[in-house]
Image (cartoon, rainbow, N blue to C red; front, side, top):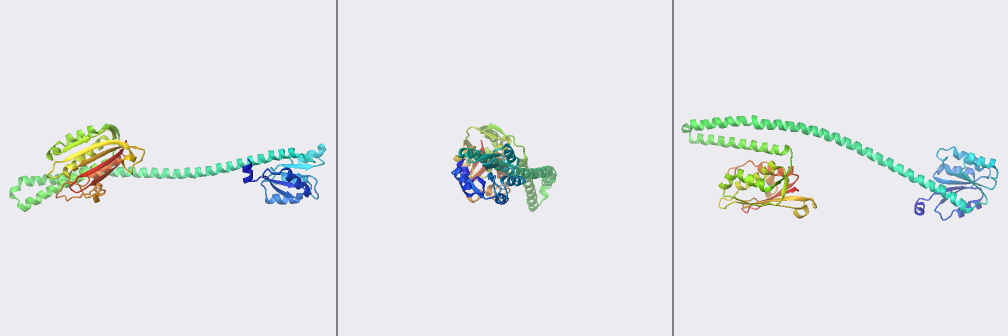
Length: 410
């Protein structure tokens, strides 16, 4: 308590027309951390109180010239800001009930008869100063609460505005998804129908009129068929990419060995054609969106088959392990578990400068005349990994193969 009073000393107004009495009061109440303000008359006390109103208590002599203690107390009580400041009268003549009653009626809370008892004065002053300190703390707490309430109110207003913005954004997103659904329908039906007709009529001409066509004509019709097929393949790839973006994310805990086995069966002809070998070292279960993850690995395997070396058997190695992020990659949450899937092949690889570019939509590192494709396959792979709240990295070297590292929260 003493340290608090020392930091914010409690002020006491002492009023007496005699200097020795003022000094006597300060001696009795010394060494308690109080700050004393002296007034030599009632008028002087009122002047001080007009400027300074944070007194814990007023110790006032009753018998003073011009304006006695009773009159001074009555004037103090007329101020709304000062009427609650306790006043203790100090006098040698309050020895009748009428005199005592007049003291209380003028606003005193207590009185003491001179000569003063130091112990009693100290005790009474301590009670009122402690009450003053408690009231100050209460007011500070009330102010703090009021400030906090204002902050909370502002925060709530801000949150309401953000919530309204989110609702608006969600509505706009819903509208965009509706437009995307419409685009998907157009892409899957209206855009492909003319292509089917072009293919059909081109095939009819080539079947029925082939002998009558010049070599140049035959070449042009073959290019029409080739371009039509590529356009159709591109539309299908775009549809796959858009569905990957908006699909519902239903996770299941599945053995990756089963996923790889299903893919090997689906791509059996392609694997045999390239004389490819898929080696697996998969450990534990993974929490994934099954059909999406199957598409992810299928795209990676198909990509390896497409970019296999002509004079060397293709070897694909797929492994997995579960570890903390700190052990796997600096971009991961250090103390969070991840399923790390590593995909490595010994194909033609790619230049390291394309490590990031390789995942872009329509990004092809080789001429379409040499390697077929739309340049969307690895973009779909990246999107599927993102749908799993994970991330993927790629690295490669020309003629030394490619490596893909996939990190998915476990």
